[in-house]
Length: 386
Image (cartoon, rainbow, N blue to C red; front, side, top):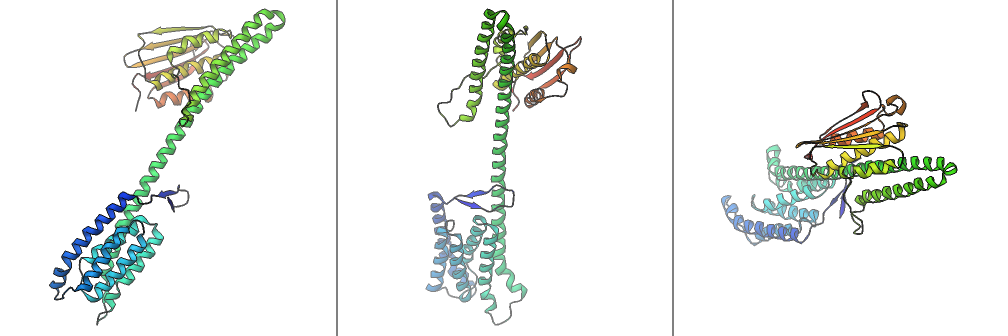
């Protein structure tokens, strides 16, 4: 496939080589125009008192059959059509052969870049006007206009069609790039949530193990076992998250994405770090769209990770409320508050949560809780926004 030249900064588009269907279509068009030329040449010449002889029909046949390869060799087709049409017009009046010439000009304009196509069109126009200057009188502007119209009009139409196709292809490429960028951002957010939570939990458990190692070595073993379990769970979740970038690999493991059903497991995992977490569920749990369920879970996970990192000695409470149209998630803690925790600046965790919830058509709020501590609240629609 050949590359098309585009303006600076634009991605190069590839020109599709004509396939067998294109060749069949071109051959059919050539036969149609051949039949049209053979049937219309004699009446057209007779109207002007001229008899179409074998030479006229030979020129009509050559111009029409050249279109059978118009998409494979556009310039060669235009050259044949221009020469035969010019020779015809030097001997006979205007006739159906001009339709074949028109199609050849259009083909060059629509299938070749502007600059070489313009050069080819100008050469064809110069050749076509030979019959005008071959007359006894100077042609004048009115004499040149009909000949120019047979080149300018199809060239303008072909150029417009080509530019429209290139714009459409660029738009599709841009949409594909935006989708790929969005997918990469989503994966990056998932990795941030998984790794951030896992490392925070491991760090806390390691601090506990180091504290107990000299005084109570038998209890340090429990903390080390918790580190092993947490790291394994984080790695498993990370592997599932990154499987999305291995679509072409049939061996990529697929597992259900995390959701609110895994919140109790998350609570038990954090219990080993010394962070007591209570979970309250209000309403009848419903099956949520995967994206909504995952986003709600990530809000809980990231919020509890922030508590583990910044709140100091604290407890946390998770409240999940289901309604027929929405699911609400609230995470509060009794920690040191916004000023001490450094969470008011909207770090990447809070910003990521806000963007994730907003993309699904929900609302998000984070700030100091009444009576101290911190509160994160998210409301998500049960139906995922298109």
